[in-house]
Image 1: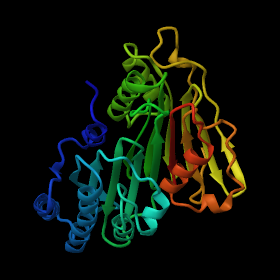
Image 2: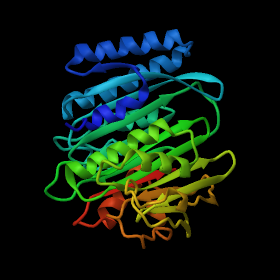
Image 3: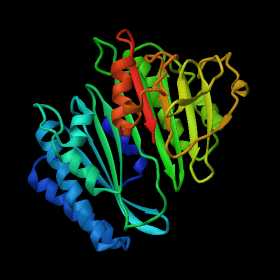
Length: 343
């Protein structure tokens, strides 16, 4: 039996304190956990109370609009200061209109309300992963004021091909200070077997996320022989150094995009997990990346000729909105679609 996406989202946290959301009483337990974890890790009182408010907004959205909601509390550090991260996952239908949710617009039944806009205002950083028909993961972090430098936030939007409830496309990411490592995976075909392949790659990614992009692909290749196989792209963004390293196999789109400029990456032509494929064919490519530029990765549900560098209004959108709009406006109806944006 395939793991639930909520379990996959929480698995890399390594036993973080986690609370299932059933009612307001369980939300009170989340608030208690935040205060206890924060105190145990010398987190500033203001940060703790900010995350109490964030948890209230996230938890009430889950109670109103989703099922299987869970919130994990994770101690974290950045710039030498202690902070907190909340990872809120659910098994809802996903956010139908990410832009409206982040603006706090009135919501229709079955989707997130103004709470998400409050989370974006309160937290220092928010990563948002939306999977249509499967659920939503919100990762919100808070640190003391003026901690560290600006960091990229991640937005992911995916949806399955019509007739399927699970997509064979997947994505994941890890942070290490100023370095952000992201990956997009396309399991061959559609449905459960394709998802098994991409989920296996996600698990291998998290076990080897500190390696180079090419080494991560090699680890995924070694993990996939008993699956359908997958194509995949991995990117390691080092904003302190001002560059991104990319390695990819198969038809996965990778671009650094800014106003009126774009750098498009190539990749090797084989499938991870197939015995004939030789991982030594994978080459890493390095390119500059500026704070104003976005890194865009997408599965082949989005045409490789995607060109958004002249759509200045689109490029101003938050990462999750940009990901959803690319998927909706450019995604093919006859394939799974997944887009990841880091900006």
